[in-house]
Image 1 (cartoon, rainbow, N blue to C red):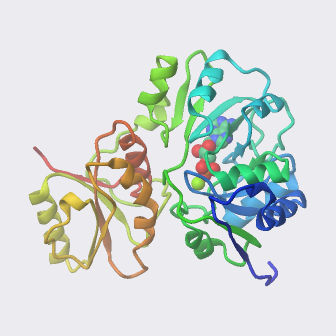
Image 2 (image 1 turned 180 degrees about the vertical axis):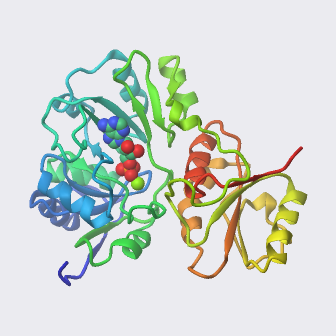
Image 3 (image 1 turned 90 degrees about the vertical axis):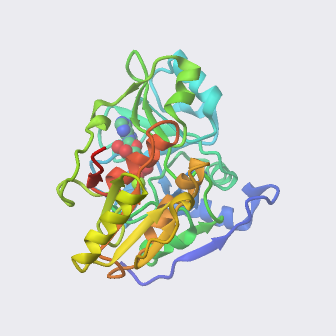
Length: 351
Ligand code: AMP
Ligand code: MG
């Protein structure tokens, strides 16, 4: 890696004619030269590269340290562009696009061979979405390219919801970051496989199962999502993802149970951190407490989740206890990310 500085280009989301903005034009010209560019979407910051060029895609995997068998999502700026990259567009997909694009819904279909093989990790399918963010759309249009863009974090870390998070992880590893402020949804897109008879959710996200069902009827969930973890499980046994600086353990119980769990850890000499909602934020005596939002609006929890996971510094606490949420609506995506961040580690109150 050479020592070139990372350019942080500040762009106001609300200016007119964003496509012509000098920073968007500069970033677009770099994309055309197969460089990578971090940019905001409505979900999280993405690390974009030309989806037609394996050379650009290699740079994305390298900057993130991402395993090359994990395929990327392709971002387009117009519903009509889907047709350029897939074999057939089923009727259900037309309905899904009309209902949810632009927005946090990624559609998996058989590709027609135009997208670079490294994007799809040599699968026969490709994942595509149209983001609902003025900067993302302007950048795609200015570059006139489909952009493959995974989250702009180091692999394994919480996804970035602010340009500062991207800088934290990728400064000096990429040359261009567009800073458009905080992202809105906060968790990644819902990935729905539309190659079968019925749509199947592979990853819960910003568009809920309930919303999808209201448009296309029955929706399946990938059975792999239902490997419910039993409590308690030792941390680190499984994969980790979105990992904070200390082991994360989910605590499923009432306030009294939370208190006992905290006291037990402290009696063993552990410094305790809490990831907690406004409703639960009261008089726990712990080393550090981070509020992730309010139960009365779980969208606030989704929006703040990754920032909250990043808020704990190394060695600041020995364990982080987090609340759990009902797995309906946006709660499904929140729990999916919390389960991954904790590696399945959960303490359950026997009721
Ligand atoms: P990220 O870019 O980090 O948000 O992750 C992209 C997600 O989309 C991962 O969970 C991938 O496994 C998934 N994905 C991308 N392409 C495909 C595909 N062709 N088939 C199934 N899942 C995909
Ligand atoms: Mg990611």
